[in-house]
Length: 285
Image: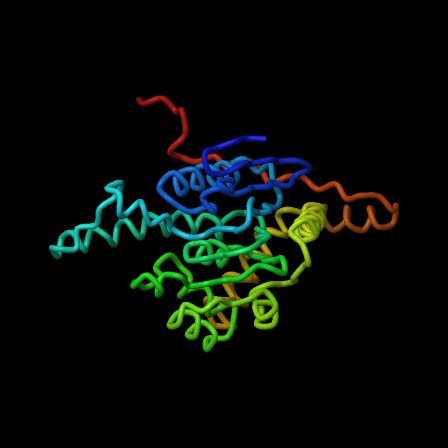
């Protein structure tokens, strides 16, 4: 178990479990939250030790969104009195985008297990995950409109690709809550469970099932789904042909067949650690 100010991270049996862990503050988001999340996701991406990530939370609510005291107590000030100050805000927003984009770009699937309120920035967060499970008391709210601003960290870009656009308009314009049952009906949640404990058990069971599959094929599937979401069918099919040519591994097929025949668990290799060029210790000459 690795503890941070805002999170706990545990990796067992190729499953990473990342918990938001500031229940007394309703797991609100502030600069430390983004800094730690970016660090954790970078390490998971680079190491290859985990094959799936479960994102859950603690306390009554999954995440109450951005901590407004960041903007009101002098911790962070936005200068909206000049064009240059407002233009600088774009860079701040894009920096937060990069953190949430990391969640979507992981080499592994991400399962979100959501209890209670998923509000404001919490919605931005879960929209970047692959699979969403909810407890019966979970609800979703584009809270930004209720405090006089437009949601800006990905909800308005990702949510229309997950649920009907009309429901997104309703949420974005009214700030109404989308309850768990309706969230499942419109496709935001894969499944709703009576309790948080049941939901988390189901998330871990699903994660174990995913972790037993060949990681490179899972990664390829995630790449193909995301590309098809954002491109025309013909373009996505062309990309699929090149993707398959790059990730095809006959030994994985043989292992799947043999494991089934021998009635044993599969044994697929982990993804290799990433080696970034900028991190090389090659000596300067």
